[in-house]
Length: 166
Image: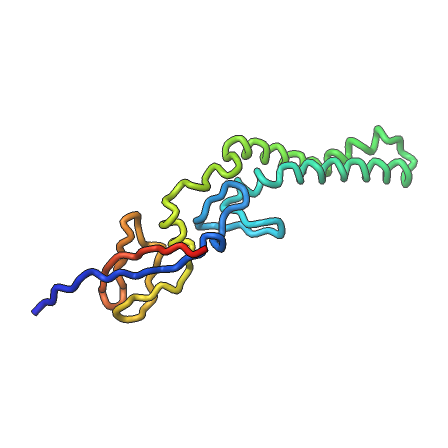
């Protein structure tokens, strides 16, 4: 005898201000987050785009300080030692150039509203959504745009509603 049960609804309260977003493009979900002391980025591409000016500043500072050091500490003329210093620190200039090209391909905050905000908020939660029938964790990363879940433990299914708190 099978029972006709009404589909279960799960309500999830989420504070949108506490959702992790990429510091450069604003994306709320990523498979590979890159965390630095300056911020969190969804990809290496966004990290290079955000830090392009920093790489250039490091290059200029190192060239200036190295030229002063070469001028004071060695008997070589500055025009002999400076090309070697620029060659040593040229990777910073290359990273800055890569960052500028990334800034053109992924503009700042360009992906902020790429997905439905409710789905993005729901997928940003790592755990804490329980099946109302058996209290097993529901993997919210597998929920699609229709917001239908299926419990892998007891087989219950239903919809998940996101309630935004402020």
